[in-house]
Image 1 (cartoon, rainbow, N blue to C red):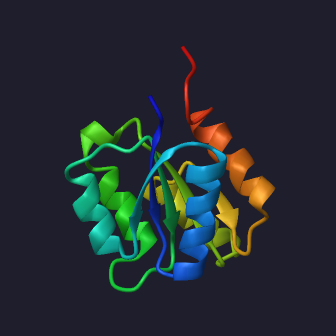
Image 2 (cartoon, rainbow, N blue to C red):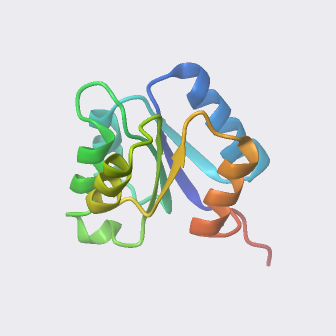
Length: 128
């Protein structure tokens, strides 16, 4: 069974790069959202293994999305990888406080994205 990953990214080009890495390269099952509102709607009916979450989103930002997800007990096992161009220490601390398990700075190296995802959820597909 493939791991389920929700990618929340408002920039179409970046969203497509993330999708290619997560779905085509790693073999995860991907769902896409381009806003915080859409992400929260999607997790209300599904339990992803991982959320790759842009922190700077229009409307409801990624910090708020993470905070709201962490109030839902059924999402306790869901890991959150924050992606952000915000590199100040206080922004990183805010992301951790909101419930993000790890943070990757934008622009990111594709190998670093792969390593972060594998570090959080292991292999996307299981054999056997």
